[in-house]
Amino acid sequence: MDVKEIAVFGMGRMGKSVATRFSESGGQVIVIDNDQKVIDEMADKVAYAVKVDVNDIEAIKSLGIGNVDVAVITLGENLEASIMAIIACREMGVETIYARAKDRLQGRILKKVGADVIMHPEEEMGEKIAKTLRYGNLRDFINLEEGVSIIEAAIPKQWVGKNLMELNLRKKYGFNVIAIRENGKIITNVDAEQPLKADTYVVVIGEDKKLDKLLK
Image (tube, rainbow, N blue to C red; front, side, top):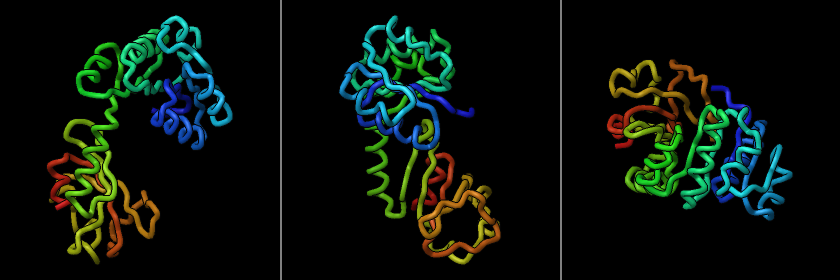
């Protein structure tokens, strides 16, 4: 999906980060919050910032945001407001809805009322820290769904001097290299015949149990 315009509900740390970064990348962003001070702060950073009672479904629907590609609901622990926002967005025809949940139970509730993707930032951060502590070669970690992740990790010593064609990682380990990082720069158009250097990181996608082989 080519995402060009998003609506972000809730200007906490996560909401501000999503809105600011997407706007800086050239996308159109509408931010919605019930705090005028926060709206004033974000007004110059996004295309449109509006103060709305996020607990009022009719007020949300009056915004007419049905044409945005994605709605991102980051209303923290305000479960009622999250539900209202999801229902309003769904009724307005928003194609994809992301919603932040504080725990698994809340995630199931938000999924039931119409969220397409549930975000568990605290849980994912805890898992990321745990993995980083356990595996010294792990640089970054993104959980896509249960049991499937994207990771960035330093290559094992035995890979140095070999190329991806020789290593044949997909056949041996069952995961795919989608990019490499060399000298601090991400390279997505990877030359499979180029020997890997000692300071290279690989960005791979696959099942967690298979990715563990790389991390170990």
